Image 1 (cartoon, rainbow, N blue to C red):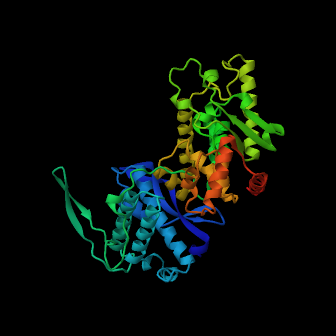
Image 2 (image 1 turned 45 degrees about the vertical axis):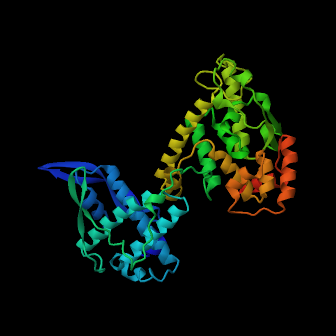
Image 3 (image 1 turned 30 degrees about the vertical axis):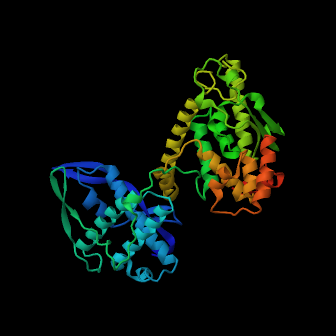
Length: 445
């Protein structure tokens, strides 16, 4: 069985059999399996005994078992990837299997996760939590005589609020292994993120599709944010007449007139701090067949609300399907966060570990859409100046906060002068060539 090329380790729930006297009972349990990439089935692995023996006690919850299994699977898949990449420290494992695991392999994995934390992809605290599972796994392997590596199983007493307990000492925290750890005192308090990362297009589409299911009255708004960089307050300020489509439902282009329409949409609202428009402008939107489809569906829903007499504001673009009133900034935020929660749940169930961890460990809400839009523009080859113009920024600094590590500015003085002209004209435009590039990219999805 060619595990290296045909299988990956995966968490698997199953029904465990247990006897209570003469009574046969079934209970949900979590194990470790080998997922066959070709047959798309999971083959049971004896490593499930680790979860069963260490985390399968009656006092341990199903989530405790799942967390442990998930961390062990991630470690083992890391080992497999290192073998595929011909890492000399891992190559012998191709013949030796689990028996050949050494402390160095665990140390390399901890160091890898530490580097991820330094890049802001995960929290430093996660690395220490992950190490605890790795320590338990290695101790179990050693006790079961499943690995040849010789290391001492050491414990130490720690006291908390007067209660002492014995804990396992990590064998990886050894200078000779060269294990890298995050600095606990440098834990980043502000863990807000501004983009979905390299898989941004697929994640953006998934977020929109989930919005259609969970909060259909803002799905089109989420789409406008992702493909046009609109802020939350700008979205809820839109009128039906704010949209200036080219072609049917913007299939050939879409310009949005972003204005302060609070008096028309929220005339009786005492505080409109959540509905403010930061920068009135004409905003170009990236052409997308998905956006065009949602555009049409959104207006069909508005027409339906009007026909049944539920529409209480005929001018506003975003209306609650429940009340018929315009959606406020706070309501939009709440709806978006419900979509976000479902989005994270779906990523977790799909086994999309890397994206899930990044988006779960960090803080984000509606404003991330503006960052995703910015990086869409960067992906299709726009310069920082062109991106700043397309975003409707007053200065280059805002755009630079998203792209400063990916590109360098040329001719700063000329760039600043050009940007100033566009800002004063209130135009946030995107060159046709770039719009066409996104259409071509979308065709391959």
